[in-house]
Length: 66
View 1 (tube, rainbow, N blue to C red):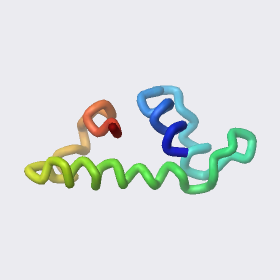
View 2 (view 1 turned 90 degrees about the vertical axis):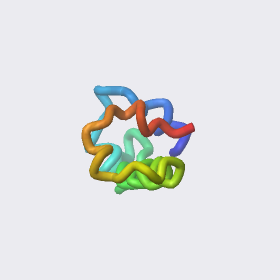
View 3 (view 1 turned 180 degrees about the vertical axis):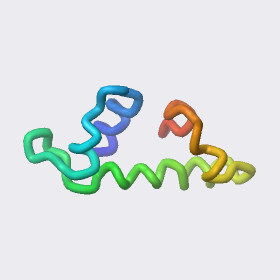
View 4 (view 1 turned 45 degrees about the vertical axis):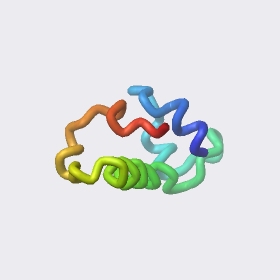
């Protein structure tokens, strides 16, 4: 799922319900979207001067996984 998430990361038309509540049709397990919190944690690990609250308004490109 990580590869697929990277491919769809900046898509403004992604299927929110499918990523967060699952979709058999799209082969997305339930609650998959909630794993994105790990992106914030990983970013903060790499940038300890940053807090989660300061990232709330950042565009998705800021946290883009490498």
